[in-house]
Image 1 (cartoon, one colour):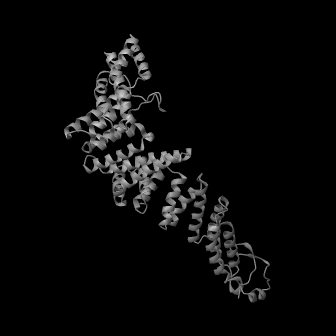
Image 2: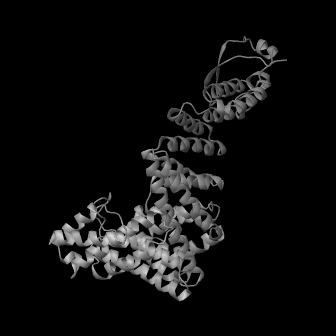
Length: 472
């Protein structure tokens, strides 16, 4: 029986002038005799038609899909599709290419729509008979519904724009199933379908924001993953996907719209942690932190789910609004962050607040804590120097004692310049300014001191320095 089938197919292939190399089809024939159900009720005809269309397809592909061999493919492919759908997953992979040709060359709009319907049927039938990834795929043995639906939805979006609702439902399900493994192209067309639905009034416009938030999270996760793997090619591809989404979202991204949308949502669910996270994340992404809603949502989220990170965030917002007393407890909490850079900056900001509040000893304590965490940062030294200079007249009187604090201040500026080249210009300007306030040589001599000697600046400063005279 096997020999007869092989000879029959070989004879047919020779009749239509196709390649004589049918070793792969021979294997196919042998498998057919082992599983009649897989190849339908008429396995012989199934094998013949499958072999015919696959061989013609090779020739069509070899011509870069330009010769007329496509017209020899259609009938045997259609027979296999209708009569032995389990024969091979290639029926559906090849079917997409075949139907795309028919759609592009349809003689009328009605014919085009019929071919589009058939293309959708190809995707549906593939899922019905081959619901899992095949053995050669990296995700073999797992459902491929989300992946196939993604391709189906993208094709429908491009071929039949008026079916935007079907596109939306198809791509929405694809993204739900694929999650963080969603293809970037699918995410782009899903977002576009959401916008079409909103413009048609089929969904609330707030869905645009929700979809953007969901998609950007997926893209960011993939960008980070590829960066960690050192795969710069795919990292760049996903960055381009993100750029596409950002550009598409831009008309809907005004702060007024963002605030309006999230204010309405938070009015209904003021203690929804996930909603608060989305609201703060979205407003932050779109640089809408100036609106009171952003601070209010951040504080509510921190109350429900406190952390040093959220405390740091709120503290900076309050500091920017010059609400120093309110910012103190948040930034104090932020110093417990496991992120050393964040803890360091929290101490720096606390130093700035205490300086503004004229609590210089406490401000210096915070600056020194910042220096402990990052000795290379010159800013805390600048802060201490500024406070020493501001205290000069309060820590002594007259031509000599009223100026000794400037020595200690200049010491700090010099230290800042030494540790951190990025503050050198600022430090030098301070040094030049305050050296002019040093006591004169006469004042030093009159008070029985000598230049170069060690001097202890008292008051709250209580620090050793070197006696220097102002330059004439």
